[in-house]
Image 1 (spheres, one colour):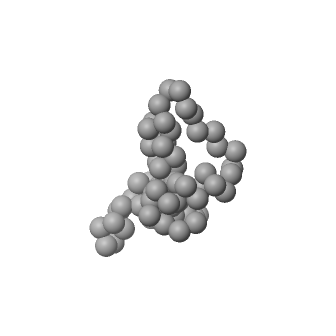
Image 2 (tube, rainbow, N blue to C red):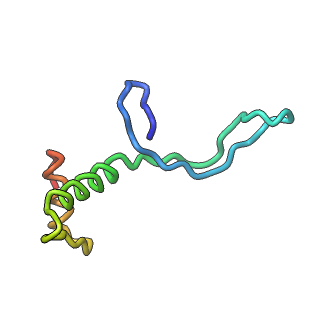
Image 3 (cartoon, rainbow, N blue to C red):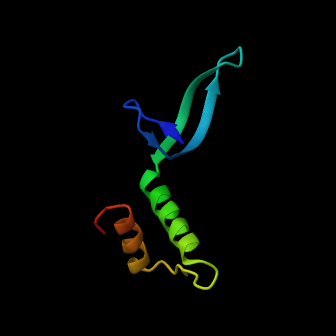
Length: 79
């Protein structure tokens, strides 16, 4: 989890390597930083829906658009 300049919290994946100076101090990051905030929000919405379903009913996710649409709707977003 990261904090953006405006104070908003977000999720990101960093892939790459840290370049170090002769004194082993980090001086540069070479790679990519990908914002995965929306994906994490959908995962958390699905987890919440599964917890609310209880033990008798489990939500199975097969990559269905309907499941993703329901999760986005739970977040107040349009699918």
